Length: 168
Image 1: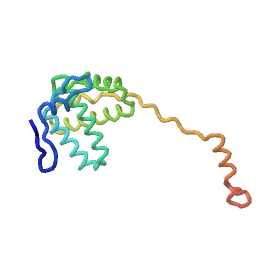
Image 2: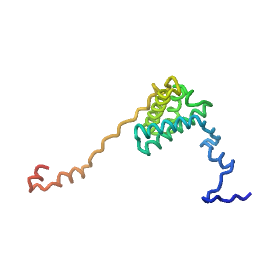
Image 3: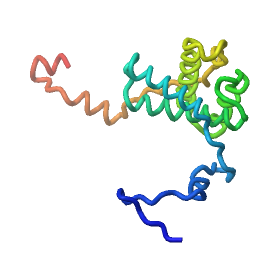
């Protein structure tokens, strides 16, 4: 069967192509995400965009993090409204085991906590399963130090023949 491109030059996807796109890394098909979960995520991101005026890149990062949450709920045959604290802790462990940096997982946890606070405030759920969810400890970046060559160059830089050079 020969498919023709549409006016935009894009070929329509076949059902098989759609299935291949939804394949996880382990070869099993991903479950489609529920519309209700997507609507909740969209509402949360809209609030962040309007009320907190977050940058587009931050909103995209949060959107990706919440996509992970939706997929985690779908993998457990439930919705984000029914996830428990244990389910969320398992998600954090899974992300760490997958090799994500502690800072990335900490951002995921912050996003999830904000999302569940939003759901409680909006009356969509009654209790917050992420209230006591803790992020992995992210080690602070070590300070950079100067090489001996850099120190020598800085000391030799000022012109000691001028008052400013003597000061520096």
